[in-house]
Length: 285
Image 1 (cartoon, helix red, strand yellow):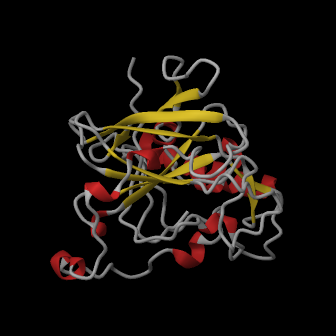
Image 2 (cartoon, helix red, strand yellow):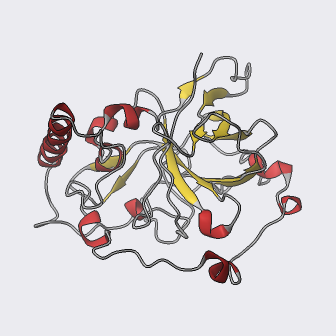
Image 3 (cartoon, one colour):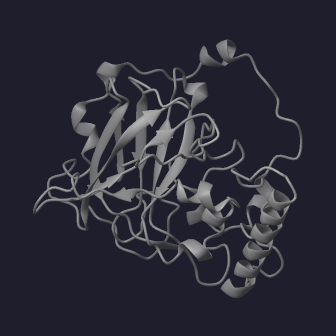
């Protein structure tokens, strides 16, 4: 069975908490209903589908200016990007060695005295290039909200409880076949300020570093069957349905551990026509 899921990665030097937990600059009063935002989403998707029918290419990446995602109106670049010499930048950029990443960092359930609350799960997959070849010895970072949908960050004011036994961050180095594996807790959905009664689907943030800090790419993994998919402007900002589906992990019964954890498989493809969506240089979500 082909479990490959392709995500879109972006070279971000970004933050460890997504902006979707913060108030978003809104168009108009900022009190738009879900129905009005959903209507905008559907209109954009219909426009994208019409362009494909007329011979255009599918929109595999979000539009930089995506009105249903309110803060994108103010945060997307309006000028050409300034290119810099990577070697010059890397002189002052952080670096890491494989000895800096402990094998226990991939288990987010053992980082404190007690066990965290929530549904324990295993997330595993491979990091691949566009030809299906493994990307070996790649630093993969993960961060996420806890089971109540709250990040350990001072700017996250969602009134869900913090879990003293869950920090929500982990790291791993991919193996010879490009494989990675995390043990963690399924994150909860959480509200954000995009519009009235806006909720983000449960998701996990992934970061891949490449060979240098300046090559960092960031994406999100979602869970199958989430009822919030159709309502979420961030997920829906990818107009092509097939590209959106590649962000969703697959339940893997063989990866599940009896009386211990649920298993999900999610491969990350870095390049090619079926590459996983990665966040743009203008986004931090």
